[in-house]
Image (tube, rainbow, N blue to C red; front, side, top):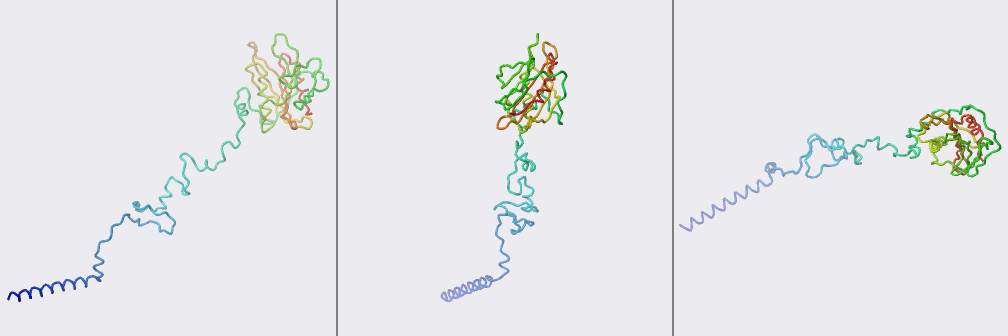
Length: 295
């Protein structure tokens, strides 16, 4: 009997194993079993409104969480960095970036300083001719030929006297006036200041330089500013009144400067100044300015 019972138990175990195998084989190709499987975990949340890859927008970095409703393209447009890829500089506008380089038309430092000098006002915008000054011109005899400067000017006789030219190239002086430390002077030389882009600006700068040869604290007011011809050469003429104080009294001098374009040389300067203590000689200024010639 014991042997019979063992046979029955073995047979029952075989039946149970066969039934389990049948269930496994039947479920392996069942679609419903596959659908019930849980989805794998994703590392990023897909943005529903994200632009397709064909739009050219850059894909989000791996692992980044995109903002729902904001596409990569709209993120780029709202960025402070330009969409061209160039880095934006704080405080720099597009108009500043497209403007010409600073200093393209920069003013010469010497001219810039002169324009800020309160002793020397800006030149008149329109040409102003030299007026006829009072008096009668002194007699002349020929010309003083200043070959160093490439210029010729009248040689006054009697009242004016030739003097040692240094530091100029030529110099004529009126006699000293009793009790006065300042007298009339007529000089010529190559322009002693930086040459500018125009004869007008160079003449302006040269007129400022002439204040070195007037009493301290002198200032200028313009009486003339005009282009002129020195023979066949172009030039610029300035007339001005110099104001200053001597021994507590306000005084003036009449002055003029001619700047002449000289071939293969620096422009030449002819400068004349006569104080009011010698105003009988003021008309000599007209004589000088009308007689200047390039050699």
